[in-house]
Length: 436
Ligand code: SF4
Image 1 (tube, helix red, strand yellow):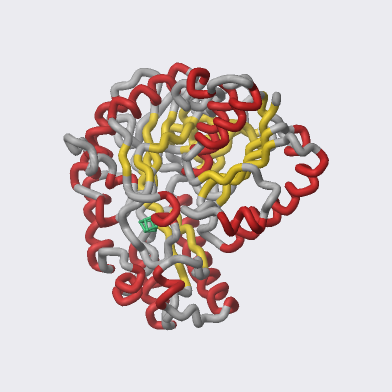
Image 2 (image 1 turned 45 degrees about the horizontal axis):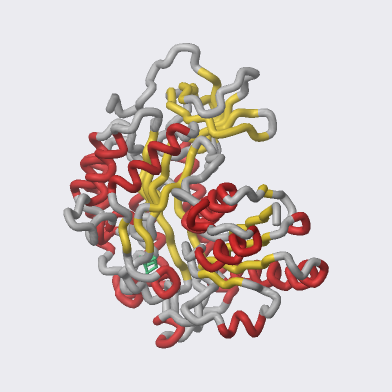
């Protein structure tokens, strides 16, 4: 039992879970390998938020059967949102899978691996902080979700909202800083609800203040926020704290009040418009991203047009648009008729994407000629790549090594998806909002 292979699909929370399980394997002395065929332990970390993701997991699971047959002592585990409270059905469909684990419930697998190694895993495994983190690392701060959006399966799989204590998160971020991490992205399904369940209710703003003081960390990001929990304290902290980036992911999902009610989103169109206006007023230069679902059960053409009009009016920085698909077990799957054709849903998604391409063309073109602070995250096709504080992707060419550094880049060209620039010899404008 020497090696492990982790395959992950889905949201950043899944990526963070996999990194933490990998840290446990590292502490047990297992080596990460690139191919499942080379591994003694294979873990598939699953997602069921969209049908496409679930199909990919099922197809990879099918591929595990011959691998298990070739090497029966190999451990195969399925983790993540595909595993519900009862895994009997999965066990019937995939009898060669040894362990089924709900999100973050690593214990059954660690117990099995520890048993094979002949060690007490609890004695060997300390804090699950990623061992070889990238420059930018995800840190889960709140697990689960207390809301019950009618289209969403996550509360049924990840359970009720539970925040990690401030000092536990701070200790993890300190370790990450000591391992070279420059940027942390604080994660939660409703990250702005952070702390409401803790004894002194520190809130996300309180956590920001604590993390802002950690040496070595240059940037703090957070996602995903829910409009219901976005308090003025949080917005003000984004404005005031130098390390907290001016970038907020704030899913609206739809622009029509009746659809929002049917989704049980707890706000209306006017509330969202007011909130975006207040964020922009408080945090100059802020980038706001959103998520949209088109083709929700019963969404009429007029209601869809409300979504398009909202996006046209607000001109947000980025829109992630998905076509509705029924998720078994959700309220919508039990009570609503998914009557729209797939062609109509695709057409609506394409109309959102076309509008947003125009908006992003305009927004990014305005950055040409400006100087932007970039955190360099890696190289792609011979160029360095990094992100602005507002999370825009920037490329520049240079022979020297800039990995993990904050540099200033003059933006020369733009497209809807990225920016191209040149390294500025002198920093003209390191922090566009002058928070330093
Ligand atoms: S807020 Fe809604 S969409 Fe987000 S995880 Fe909770 S139930 Fe799902």
